Length: 543
Ligand code: ADP
Image (tube, rainbow, N blue to C red; front, top):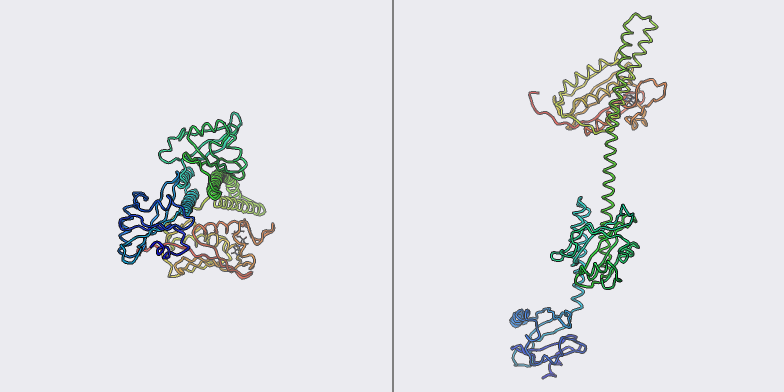
């Protein structure tokens, strides 16, 4: 009978096959060469299955046998046994087995030791867990503005993924009094139960020269993976032994080539040897910590720089406000007295002089105003009001302004489209300031011609245009217009007075109002300055 069974098995089968009957008694053992199991194969014969299996899987096996019997199928299971103090894993495949025609039902169990496979899977899973933990810890360092929280989260994630008993970060510094470098534990994590380790929660500090066994390799930017018993007799060995540390892995943290500190992983249970791959993964976290430190330093420095810049910009504004006041007061005096002088009994030649005096003083006053405005808009944010702008009022204001200008030779023409809403929401002062600047430029650069103000409603935007029939601008100059201090003619002998600042203020205001200045012009043939303004239309019919 045995020969028959042997013939039924494929010759190169590598697993141990145990045949047992319905009473779970082993009846045959088929042992290929080199198979190693927890007992000699012969020892199975005539004995009950339950004698060899861990109790927890016997019930499970009975159910499986039932299933195999009913479905005429196979089933598989894995179980472990502690052998020589080491856990060994076995893979078992169960199936129905016919010993001989007509004989009662038997089962075949094919068993092989799968400890190696099991260990490979476990180590892969461990690595995967570690990888996830490092990825999420590094992400937290990027996302969380509170660095200390992010670091603690990272220590906990990684510490628990690698089953460490104590994880910590030490930060280096120099002792002020002695000038000796030292390192202080600033953050740490331990799983519940292990946290009652000695001095947990304290900011422990070591002078670096007291712990050369730890510090020297780190200073060379090397990781340190040692068993406590291997450390030469030293104060740090005593401390580690007292704390129950059996092995430790410490990785240096370098920021911009400077030894910033280190991160450590203690094991209280095992003498743990880390693989190169595991160390490389943990080192990537040390690099993330270093980068977070660098980012934090940069943020602090740039916040300080911003603060300084704001302070200096504020003092610049204060200075400008004071200076403009100081300059305007005497200048207004000059203007006032020049006017009085002008009204007094003067010879025609003296009248010419006083007129020139008033003109120059007026220009100087305008110049100061322009400079103050330009600096103001350039060094602080433009704050806009939300006024109910009535188009009728705006037009009246601008017409009156134009009349005040020296316009004897120029004609003012106004076009307001019927489409224009009578009231809209915008900053009234800013808008009229822009249009006044464009109108006065148009008037200044036009002799004996026309200045038109066009207001329209186009594609849901307010359209404002100022067209003149004046000197126009050369094509290549157009992109430069509006650049601070830029003038087409900036010579000392220039024909048209000005500072080259007015349009740059217009542009700053329009940018704040979410608009932009456009220019169409032809040299000798006039110019059109226009912009489209996004506004909220007031729907109140009564307006
Ligand atoms: P300013 O008029 O005080 O020089 P602006 O910033 O108002 O300064 O204008 C800058 C330059 O743009 C002017 O010097 C002039 O060369 C050109 N410019 C502005 N408006 C016109 C215009 N309507 N026609 C021709 N040139 C103009």
